[in-house]
Figure (cartoon, rainbow, N blue to C red):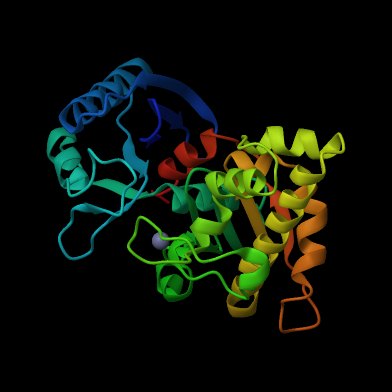
Length: 297
Ligand SMILES: [Zn+2]
């Protein structure tokens, strides 16, 4: 049995899966913004799941940020209470076993590659588009850390093919740089762009609904967003040419992206022939949690 947990947002989610991915148990608990309380809640959830199912499990955790290979502490997490904390070693000590911890975008990509929208694809680029922006490569069912040079912290690489007159000035990012992909492609960036065109600062689904009803500011904003997305993906296609790019997060719910963006990336991809497909995720919000369970293969 394998257990995946997702930290982040207002709750902790636990999924218990069989060895071949069948869901056995799904539980949620409130996530207080307090590190010690979250660690205690994770330990309690795992113990309760193992007691209910009558079996020990291997445990994986999906979380914003990453475990520093140098210090073992969490870094670049959007959760302030998690930054700098040694989550992996603390959980290992309290659960008395090895625990695997990975960035939530990595877990999302792994989930969709193993048994989601990109199953059977040899090379998958999984992308979360929401409050933050992240991506990860999975090749033949395994996260490719050796390709990190091109894809690690994808959301914090510079946006390619920038046209300042059209895209506006590069914005400062919380990571300390300016003009990161995340500053163009997050839900907040889309909302600000829409407001700047005379529309309202809205959630992505509301912008899409207004665009579909003829709101010209919302339509212009979404069309610009799709072109930015095409440019960002073209750079990945130019480097690794994934078979599938699979989207998660709130912005992945906009169905028009899947028809429009692949037409647009043709303008930016170096090779004239692109076989990459753009797909919506299969497992929804649970995908990150499932991917945490799949950190054990
Ligand atoms: Zn950044």
